[in-house]
Amino acid sequence: MAKLIIERLLLGLMTVAIVSVLIFTSVEALPGDACTAFLEREAHGQLLENCRKERGLDRPAARRYLDWVAGAVRGDFGRTANGEQAISEVVGTRARNSMLLAGVATLIGIPLAIFLGIVTALARDRPADVWISAFAILAMTIPEFVSATVLMLVFSAWLGWLPGVVLVSADAPVAALLPQIVLPVVTVTLVLTAHILRMVRSSVIEVMASDYVQMARLKGVPYWQIVFRHVLPNALLPAINIVALTIAWLLGGLVVIEIVFNYPGLGRLMIEAITKRELAIVQTVALILALVYVGVNLAADVLTLLANPRLRTMHGRGR
Amino acid sequence: MTVAASPASTPLTRIWGVVRDILARPSGALGLTLVALHLLMAILSPLLVPYDYKAISSLLMLKAPSAAHWFGTDHIGRDVLTRTLLGGREALLVTAIATPIAVIWGGFLGILFGLVGGRVDDLAMRLVDAFLSLPKILFVLTAAAVFGAEPIVLIPMLGFFYGVPVIRVARAATHDVVARDFVTAARARGHPRLTIIRRELLPNVRDVLMVEGAMRWSWMLLTFSSLSFLGFGVSPPTPDWGLMIKDASATMSFAWWAVLAPIVALSTLIIGINLTADALAKALGIDRAQKAPV
Image (cartoon, rainbow over all chains, first blue to last red; front, side):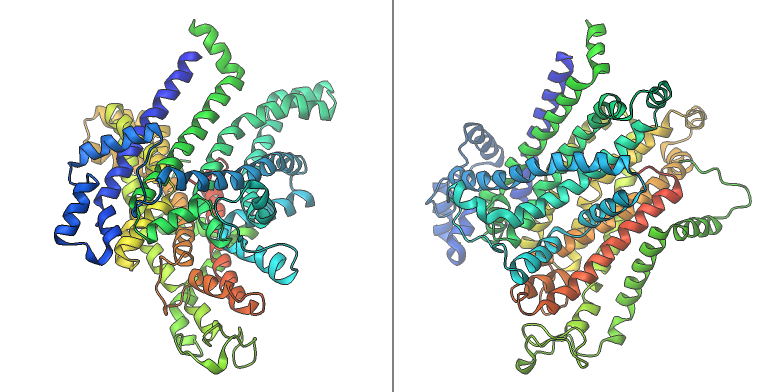
């Protein structure tokens, strides 16, 4: 078992290493660099050359890649194009804000999704299931910016209950951010819940149809005991990986949702950086997103390994 | 998954059978109707629109729906009905070309890796993993910002990035059949790899790829309209739903019609494709239950 976990860990590290090369070469392949972004129209001749020398951009790409990785390991991503701020500082506050949004949504979404998933599975094809499932499919399929806009239209523009656009600065304390983020959280939670709910539902239905559940029924085990003791532990195990995949979706979805609500998170930073051609920031944010993705998937795999009794016995045999 | 073709069935009768199967389910019938209506609208709309889509008028700014303007007018006095009717054309054109590109190259490589296996396969999968660990919208956004958002840029971009996850799917589907006797027999007969892929593997993986293609199409449309919404896609004054929603959302507290029409249009198209894809998967006997939006 420990061997399996270490294997997964190494695989994750390898993926991260490949991603870092991928990100670096993609950004290299784009026209322009930190100096052309900084100097804008004056980016030619001596001025450009001096700037490049100053920032070490005249060194070979392989050397700069190694420097970038070495810096990233220490948490140093260089400075913004105008040299005023450390990139790690800018990215840090934005990452905190995104994590707040994603964290609150996940904390609400996962328990809600598991509960609704079980309800819909047990009430399969009855009105409760049909309505909840139809709503979930709707939430899953329509684009995030559409659901966000509709929510804003209804709760902010028409009813006036909630603030629509977030109007606080990026480094505001969490207490100031929280009351502003109700609608963004609802938008994220909607999609998140819908995806996980569908998976939990099909998983529970599958287990309910299995032989051992049929057997328990025939033996006369009380219904709720079957559900809680025999069905749920087996049904929720595969859901762990789905949660990980859904969180991976979240990383892309957040970009759009943050823009709609003007929320100062990583996604908006990304768009701002792309618009201003601050490729160093784009590079950093991309690396962080990849790290989160790999980390979440790794955690899900390890959890599944730990929770699966079959794999536990495999470890016994393995020794 | 493998559908045993009876000797009498031609490709055409099989396609007809699948379509009938989709139409037999209420959700499939609804989905296919929505998609058909949207395609029809995209083709015929230039003939149907009542006004010029770029005609600006200071007298007609944000007018509520009326007999002259069924869906009202937008913030610079353009007819919302006209722009909504035309607003899906570029998105449909780009994604309709990019989807087959994605499915073909991703599908081919996936089948190849599934068949070859070994080191090459291991290495390729690491690379695919690395690609999948980054949100696709990030690549597409950056590319659109740097190279522009003309179809000539977006089609290869979307075709490439949406083909990467197809490799995974095609490879997994190939693994299901590659150990079967008929493949072993073909290998033993000494057929070249391409022949094995064409004759033995492709017919068995094709159904999975079709469903995958339908799903990719809807995700690609989503990305395309997100791109426009974020201001990196279709450039004004070309009408596009994503862009229209973005423009109209600023004034939606009092002019809801300008935002509602493109929202309904875009949502019905994406829901239609999803319902069709689901019904298609069921008609072909493929389990799509364990899928997440990768």
